Length: 307
Image 1 (cartoon, rainbow, N blue to C red):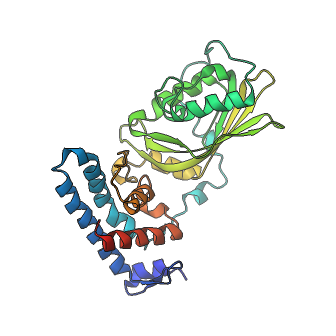
Image 2 (image 1 turned 135 degrees about the horizontal axis):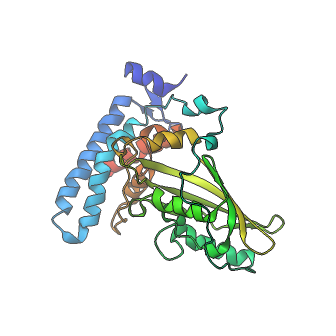
């Protein structure tokens, strides 16, 4: 009963957009995407002659290269289930942090902060880093004075009780110049549990020879504070499975999700920006059915408006 699956087999079936009620032929979607890509490419060439619009042109060029793939994603569903193969396995047993030296002291500690003050410091560290080197999950630039040296760090693939070893791992994991962290909402404070919760979105390039790209994913981070006002544990949950994370780790960037960190030009139409953000950092098979219809709708609007 999956309409997009039947389309890929026969290329004759149609899809009804549940929002507009419009019947969409799969081939017409790809043709529309191709036309939209051509439109963006032509505009890119035209705009390239104006130096003040180089960013605009570059974003159009990037979008043009990604459009057809994204539109095709409205027809295809990912039927693989990598998580099933490791459903009964605790991957932390096999992905412990590589040897990074024995745990060492990270210096003096800052005690006595209120939860609000702690949340403010963490918000800064998550996005910009303690000294501005980039969010600490992609740079290791964390305010060590906020954490106990034996703080326990847990995520779906790792568990370590050492701040120094955790920080060293972060410093060599991501390339900060090609990675990013976004804070999705203000940090939440739970006075009764002495906890702070953050929700971030991140992704980027790992520092491995084959340059694997980790697609955009969301993380929920729970910080538990001890009686001295230091973080005693950091527990992280992901919007992707641990199996998918490991799969991407061993996938060359040439086969990964398209990604661009080009800034948004002031004159860019809102539909182009919305499509850019929807495609950016996501692999075609990662889109939900609703997102696929949204992509198709945006492509139609861009084509109709001839932006």
